[in-house]
Image (tube, rainbow, N blue to C red; front, side, top):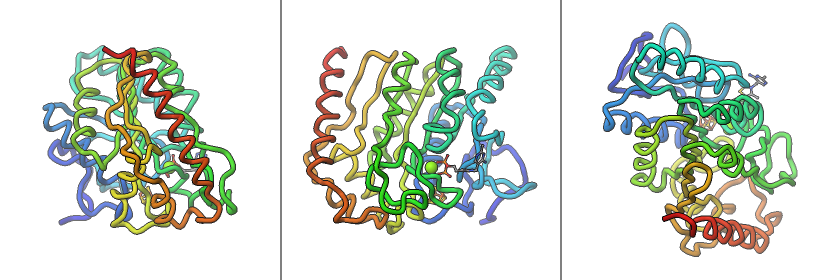
Length: 296
Ligand SMILES: Cc1ncc(C[n+]2csc(CCOP(=O)(O)OP(=O)(O)O)c2C)c(N)n1
Ligand code: SF4
Ligand SMILES: [Mg+2]
């Protein structure tokens, strides 16, 4: 098949085959699932993508790997660009979703101000962060989504700080919907996309997105790694409605997180405090369970 196609709208294929994503890249899975969810909902979308691997995916003008209209925005501005775009769409009564597709660097760090502003205004957009826990596109620097212990080009001996809790930040804006998604659980993943597509207002989705290049893992291990992350409680899968009603989607099953670290060369085995990791995971799940008790 053609690597890319001339700039053209193609509802049947959100992400075209032959794009430049690395083998085993979570973005490829996430975008494919997004395309399927849009098809199933008989909906359409335009993408707004800041600087990140996801905009490199588009390829070189005048060809593109995206089958939908796509705006490349500056790093810090994608929620603001999407807000303006969605306002014009709504004023003109035009159909379709405006979806920001952004990395963790654009979400947790550089675009956080405009993301917070869009959430505070309850803009009618879907914001999806594919979180590969690294500035992948520029060679693998740490972001505030990088977990403790991960070696990156700017944390060569392992990051000291833990991962920022972006979900709590987004929930604090009391937006209609915020959810975490794991591609190891495709049914839950698809249901959450369908839920987001059926709502209006600000919707925030966080995808744990494997990155063999940055994680120094084998491409064929990508889905297994994110599966272990859910099963061990490293990546809790849940949703928050209106910033208040929490619902846990998939409960950890007691899987030990050790294998998760072992299979990625970004972690040095002897530098990961597994007891502390287990304690943090358990504490996080306890907190979510308390919050989820209020959901009826
Ligand atoms: C204001 C600004 N600072 C830095 C850059 C360089 N830059 C482009 S992409 C990128 C990393 C993006 O990381 P992330 O958002 O996590 O997406 P990923 O590359 O991991 O897919 C950086 C630092 C830029 N384009 N603009
Ligand atoms: S560097 Fe990571 S996120 Fe970027 S295309 Fe490769 S696998 Fe995907
Ligand atoms: Mg990233």
